[in-house]
Length: 297
Image 1: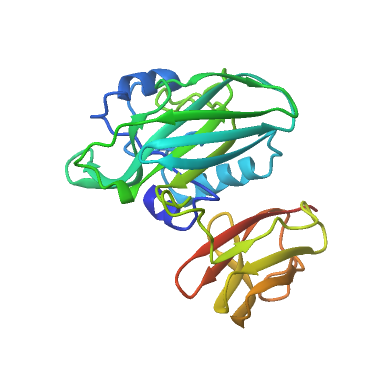
Image 2: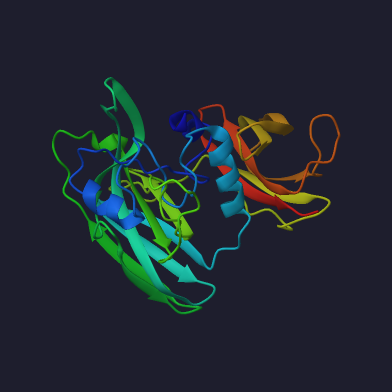
């Protein structure tokens, strides 16, 4: 199911923003995508949401990840319910829409009874439900601040903000009237509450992966692992479906920067197919960091 697929990926790779029929903005969102009924869980920018399985989601994520984005987005939490999106353009973008949505990890009533787990259930549309007009010129950086009021019944520690810039237009990729109109997502970002250390100074991660080089690559790529303290770390490469391809390193490492390499081969020594892969580092405390790698033919 979709929830299982989400658990295979970090928020650096994928966040499936979920909606519920009871949401006040449900009508606006279904109208935006040109459908009459919204599934329990869906992801903005994913073109194939039915059947909801890992194969269709992985194929769409693979297609999206292989594209070069014209934008970079970073999110900062300034205080409770107060977030700023910093968007930098590497190419002109016009006629797009910006979405910022506050989400909560919770359970909602499911179709036919029972409950569905929505790790990122939309609670507040910080922009209009169908987005707000957005354009930016190459080389520009725009800071956009949006806020939301936290309901006392929500667990703020289980919240976050998703932000994305999405193209307009598009078409239905399926013959089914309940498939959504496909609109390309140019770039997205997610920030969980508390990750920028509000009231406590800047958040210092215990581990990080620097951008791979070269990327895309044909034969091999270097990935630098940065540790804030000595720790046992596992670094492995995964495909877009969450299957582990090969372990790069597993063991105790000192604090500092460590140069790692992946030669594009799997655990059997066979060359991996061209496509999108993810290097994921996991520390002993459960902290993770992810870097995307694109292998060419």
